[in-house]
Length: 395
Image 1: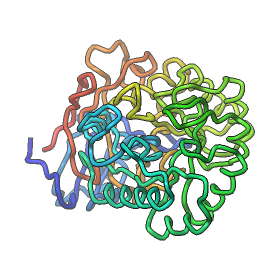
Image 2: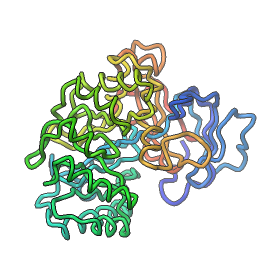
Image 3: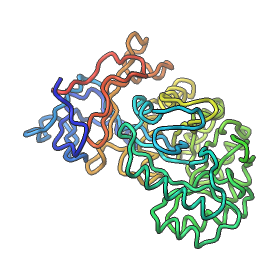
């Protein structure tokens, strides 16, 4: 294997002999292509080998007929500082999750910080600090979109303008602070939206001390941009109420690993029946009381495909392109101009599946053979997934 470049810009990278190319685009989840060309971290060509300029490449990756998929985007995490989570007192959880194919994470609030400030000055300062810190630091290369303040009573419109002016683009889960009533949340969500800040609302029973029960009527009245963990984090609303949310709201339907699995399947199936699968996004809601889940996103993909009877190539779109579009991220889709963030997958060794997609429909996890972020290889064969049957090599 050639020496890998892990810092700086990627230069020209060619990925050849791709066996299956998943696009992340739910309208066309599989591409008829076997080659990707990258320049300085961005995709510049996707197509057949004969139609792509492969000359003068800095790096050539022989995909060995494996599957290439956009890097997975975890839409719901709770980071704190660096690659440490006080919730489980664990170091390295973000880098470990990269070994599960995740290349981007979106914060739903830095709520687990010991002594988290709840006064308005303090909560704004924490959000700005988190945004700046993760903008400057990528554990394992993972892009962590952080700085998501937990809104509290007493905040005024100017506070949201201040946050936006400082570079904050997210609200933490509405309902984790003192703002729990639908009318109060609606006003603050409106202020956030006015200044380009995207909002997520907690859905279901309380997850940690201080959070509250948020019912379907509150979710509908607040009208946040993302119905956070619609299947509960951990305790879900009734299946009937979750399906009602899918029908009556036009907002993103976020399904998480740390929620009710039965309701997760019901929510995804409801979105398909309502002909709005583009609204479904996936996350883990970790780290949490149930721990750190490096393979949480892959487990959600397998769950929804195997038990929800949803084609795996569509479920991969829930975890990639859907989230990228809803969150306004320049990744998650394999198309020219997007970030070159990829996970190379194959069926696990000795899986009963005939290929990678078939193995997922049978409930198995795929093996990760390589992860690339901004055109740079961040890991080879994953230390966390079952071993992939085939893995790409750097020539």
